[in-house]
Length: 89
View 1 (cartoon, rainbow, N blue to C red):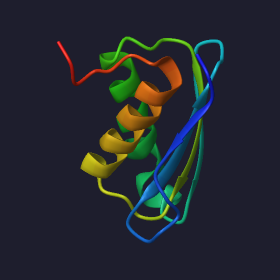
View 2 (view 1 turned 90 degrees about the horizontal axis):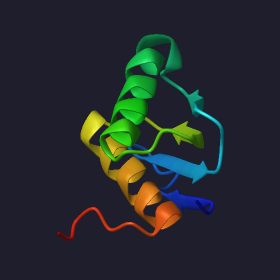
View 3 (view 1 turned 135 degrees about the vertical axis):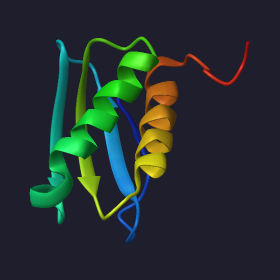
């Protein structure tokens, strides 16, 4: 696995950086962490597990992204990091 980034720091988005790690480690910075931090971490973790990724270091900077945006950014970063295209058969 290589280090890869997806997303922006614009309002309503999330920047996700994925790299090598042991187990799934999620570091989150969010302006809404008190209210939604647990949900954001869960979406990140579940998305990676669904992609078959069990070992990764994830750094996420959230600017109020919806769950669908979080899933899309995590998936894009994972594809870039692993080289595995999840959209092809």
